[in-house]
Every structure is written in C-alpha cells, then in structure tokens.
Length: 302
Image (tube, rainbow, N blue to C red; front, top):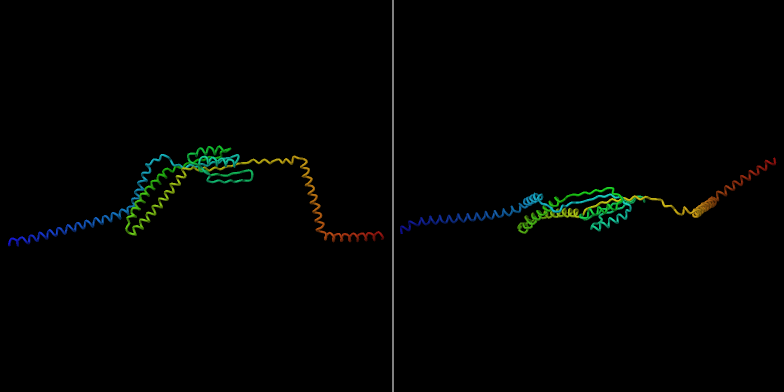
C-alpha cells in the first residue's frame, strides 16, 4: 500500500505532461489549418488582381513573338490614280464599268462635269479584286487616246495585321479568365469589378476586330481612281438652206414684208393714238394759214 502511494504522484505528473502535450499539438494543427485557409483566400484574391498584370505580360509576349511570325502572303493595300484623255467620254465610262464587272469589281463613285459643248470631264472610283488589279489597269489605259498621268502606290500592312491578330488572341485569353472569375465571384463588389473589366476587354476586342476587317477589305480590293477628259472640236454646220437661192429669196421677201407691215402698223397706231393732238395741231395750222392768206390779200389790194 505504501508502494502504491509512492507511485501515485509520479503517475499524476506523467498524466499532466501527456495532456499538456496533446493540447499543444491540437493548437498547432488548428493554427496550421487557419493559415492554410488564409493563404487560400489571399491566393484567390491575388490571382484576380494579377489578371491585369497577366494581360500586360501576355501582350508583351505576343508582341515580342510578332517579329518571329512569318506570313506566307503579304497584305498590301494597292491604289492607282490615272488621268486619261479619251475620244468618247460616255463610251469609255461604259467600257470601264463592263471591265469592273468582268473582274468582280464595282463602281464606288462616279461624277461627270460638262463645260459647254466643247469639254466633258469626270472621274470614276472603282474597287477591283487585288489579283485582277494589273489586268484592269491595262484595259483602262487601252481605252485612252492619251495617258496623261499614271500613279500606283502600295502600302504593306502585314506587320500591323499580325500585331492586331496577336493582341486579339491575348484579349480572348483575358476574356476567358474574367468569365471564369465571374462564375466563381461570391461578393457583389467583386462581381461588379469583374463585369466592368470584362466590358472594357470586350470593347477592345470589338475595336481590334473592326481594324482587322478594314485591313482585310482594303487589301482584298484595290482602289483605282480614274479622271477622264474629252475635248470636242466643234465645227459649225453649214446650213444647206443658205446655199439655196430660192429659199434665200423667199426668206428676204418675207423679211421685207414683215418690216413693211410693221411700219404701216406703227404708223396707224401713231395716228390713231395721237388723233386728239393731231386735230388740235391741224386746227392751229389751218388758222395760221388762213390768217397768213388774208394778210397777203390785203397787201395786194394796197
């Protein structure tokens, strides 16, 4: 019994040590779990906050890789300006329209200006598929009596197009990330922020796609501006009637008759229209003559 009492304090001390160790181990595990949870939350927040940085990094990467991309077909915007002197303006315009339709092109703009009967000018703007650009130019120049001016320019937009294509790919990646974050967003504040960023990215995507479509249109169809000039030599026509003596005589007779009738008509109008005045003048003249005649007779008697 004495031996048992001797070992009781030892057992109690050992039990306290064991319980203290278990408590410390439990607190350590709990702390680790809290740290893991906090790290996970921070990681999620940092991952979304790094979208903009990731976007910039992706764009920089694709921009650096743009120089390494090789395009089999160059994208060149061709444009030609022609000034042609033609013999028949209207016929030339019709021929150019037919040529444009034959090569799959179309008339984009047309206008005509006439300066009296001696000069006709105008311009026409035609869009032609690039593969038929040279063929159409040869046909257009063949319509001219004289080529006054010929200018052809080409603008290489291959690098610009490839850069836009790379930027579009990077924006698509960012768009997918934002859509993923939007599905997992739990707070209204985060949802609004992601929605605003997504709208900005989608607007940039639409802008890039618009520029790409413009370049595709400009490179697939070449533009040809043609100015046309027609100078007409006006030769006065000889009136055959002037060479006919009988016709000339009749015309002169009618002309003289018309003049005579016009004179008679004018005289009649003058006399009838001024009849009151003429009557007064006639009476005055009659009295003057009568007085003069009486005076003359008196002088003879004396």
